[in-house]
Amino acid sequence: MEPPSPETIELGLNTADPATLVVDLNCAFASIEQQHDPALRGRPLAIAAYATDAATIVSSSREARDLGIKTGMRVFEAKAIFPSILVREPDPPLYRSVSDKLIEIMQRHSPDVLRMSIDEASMNLAGTPGLKKLGPEGVARAVKAAIRDEVGECVTASVGISTSIWMAKQASNLDKRDGLQRIDHTNLVSVFERLRLTELSGIAEASAQRLARAGILTPVQFLRATPPRLRLVGMHAEVARGWSMRLRGFEVGGFETARRKSYSHSHVMARATASQGELEELLMRLSDMVGRRLRAAGRRGRIVSVGVAYRPDEGNFSKQAKQPAAIATGDEIYQAALKLLAARDPRRTVGTLGVGVSGLTDGDAGQLDLFTQAGRPQSERLEAAVDAIRDRFGEEAVQRSRLLGRARVVRDRIAFGNTGHPDDAPPEKT
Image (cartoon, rainbow, N blue to C red; front, top):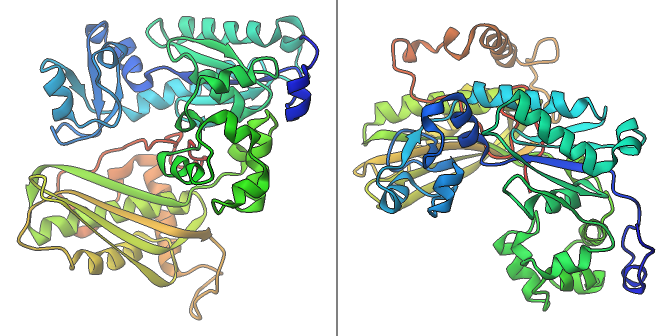
């Protein structure tokens, strides 16, 4: 690598040789489906949360993206662009198997592999034979070849190389079509000059607007901003120092230490309803699923929220309430959510219902109830036993009596930023 330039020295950029790779599967869910079913190959395909026109698209194939059909659109919007768009519901077990294969491939090159989400992972090559023998680009090409040979030719990956996970992720975002890009001190500024603030991982539109109040409109201005200037927009001193290091290519542990701030599940109904009974049963299922994820992560929450989208396009309703103590069981979440749902307009039909828990603490935090046994409330010990049964025999192995015989309406889903494994509590994509 060429010696540091005066600008590199002035900005204090990380001048180390890059040894971190981020591998991001392109159009992951859609491309995996195309690999699995040859009839889908070469055709515009959308993976939607549910098989309804109001459902959100969670992945689209390259062919669909070329038509302007993107993640986050509703199915009816995609059909307006291309009426013959193929729509499939997600197949989480299939996606998890590919995610596990990706991790296996990467672990052949480094023991230090981090699963960032179900379709993205990083690895540190420092001290590995492959770094010395092949270099980071050579390892990246070997990973790409293994994905093609062992997963399939339809599934490609963009690989970013840099001196930190965050910067390697920025590099992987530069070319989302089977790309291989590198960012180091020699090109960091020129790459930033081509980007918008919101193209930096972790900077959403709201954050960009706050930075704009301090006159920070571009990534290069963000790079050059002093901590006092960042504090003008309300950025905490420690956060400002973290961004200063991150933007200069130093590892600050953001992906390793990030933790979820909330857990939620929502369901888009094939048929909108105003029936209190039907909504209560759905609320019960959603609450159980949120509680299961909380317990798997060893967390509790104090704030329960309920969200409703009325049909047809008649607005939204949301309400939240802080609980007297942190909770983690499905029944506790359901009872709190049921009170919140009572405030909805009963005359209007509901198309989407969601339940969430935030205000999270670790599972053993807080004061135990006076009547707990063996350090855990009886209700939590019961639900832990149910969790173990469901882990072994499937989600439908144990059901509340009220739900017996009912059709399964809430399916296995993979949230953005989640590895998709029920026992994982991975960092969120930022």
